[in-house]
Image (tube, rainbow, N blue to C red):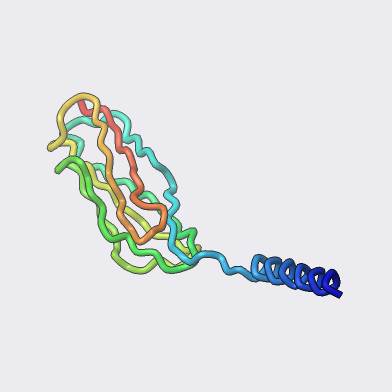
Length: 132
């Protein structure tokens, strides 16, 4: 009798654990995936004028994503973006503008940081060029 009760109790525990695992919901959170982590502008003359490039990002999470801030490491580079919600599986755009007239000659290598509501934290994009 005791063995049968223990066996039934163990069976119930196994069923409970399996059903909890089976019906567990995926953790909620936004995540960001960039189309690239390196932007290579090639060779640019200082008098070529502003160089603009767009990169996209996708919300790979399951709640809306918001890009809250983008920091650049040089005043010669700016980034435009919309501070709007990007729904799961939707895309957004970052427009990077480099003003070579304000950049130093030679190898140009700068990193921008993308802050958002993503659970993966800060993303980084390296922008490189040869300024002549």
